[in-house]
Length: 250
Image (cartoon, rainbow, N blue to C red; front, top):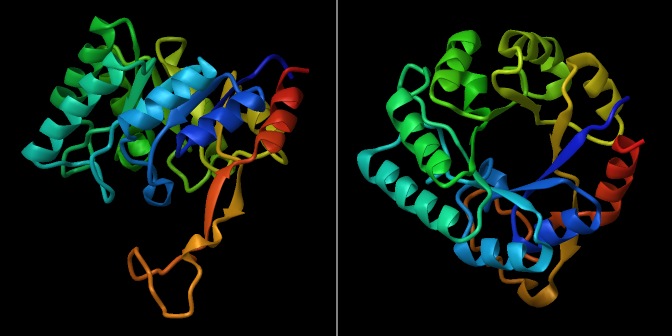
């Protein structure tokens, strides 16, 4: 297996720090990974850049639940995009679709242009996995100057979508980067790289930490009806990332 670039999905500044310690090449910074990743805070970006200096792609996603946004949501996304780029983001990950699931070229083009004007990378995220025609979607993204697309091959995980990812790579023919992400881990990364032919991979690698400050027996919760434990949270496992990074650099 040749040299494979490793991008780690991060939900906080601590995640980026751990990913950097583990030897990751690039971080995708979000918040609220439970909902697939939303726009991170400026504070987390500033701290992550200050502490690591590594390449960080910041997510721009104003809410969970789909990719067709109201005018106000898109306006907020544009303002967030400008702020993230002005405060150190090396690129933006975003995805804008119409109600029929096709790529919203106007909105996608607007953010791609913001990135290009600042010499940063525009990345289309896994919104492509719900488009009705991935070839048509790639054509649009390439016309708009998008640098890379994150995908699980229109399946729930990369191992299931590996054949489609290989087809995407062949169809792109070097005109846009294809980044497999979703279900990639230490057990399958060599298989994924071999099956897809891609030279970069996106993974998370989180572990659970505890915070006893919110433990109680009064049934108090701060989130929605799923009621996850209030005394624990996830953070990137730097040692796990280090093992993956070492394997990819052989």
